[in-house]
Amino acid sequence: MPSADLLVTVAEYAVTALLLIRMTVVGFLQPPGRTFSWPMFTRGCEIDIAFEVETDHGREQVDLFGLLPAHHPAISTEDLQIVVDYLAQTKGSVTGQGIVLHAAGKDIVKVEAGRVVV
Image (cartoon, rainbow, N blue to C red; front, side):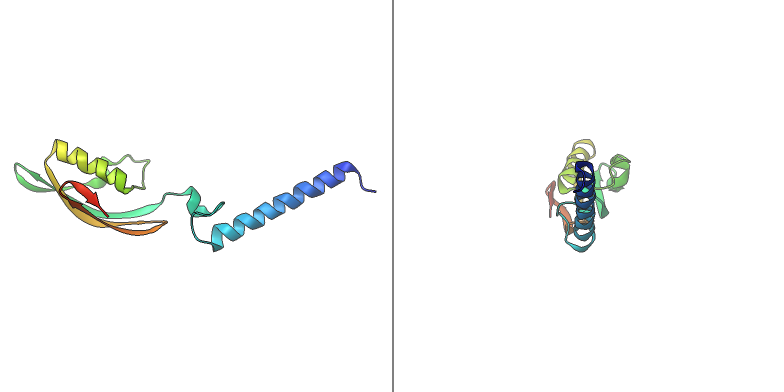
């Protein structure tokens, strides 16, 4: 009869192998948001948005990336609203539109009457 230590070691290897198989299947073959999936751990996105501010000197383009922290490459619509509110308070009326691509899909974003609309 095998020893208890051998049975525990075999059980540990079996559980580890099953978890690795599960993570591989879900992480690479199933849609985002599932347990162990790669997009579950990332917030990567691509932003293509142009903001303009109405100032005393006319319309001015705003560099969105100059307003975001360098460690925050992804942005949500709530984060965009915070940026729009900041620009409205410091510079004037804000308009803009663009696209935000992220793990869940694509959002077309517009700024209408000071509000971010998806």
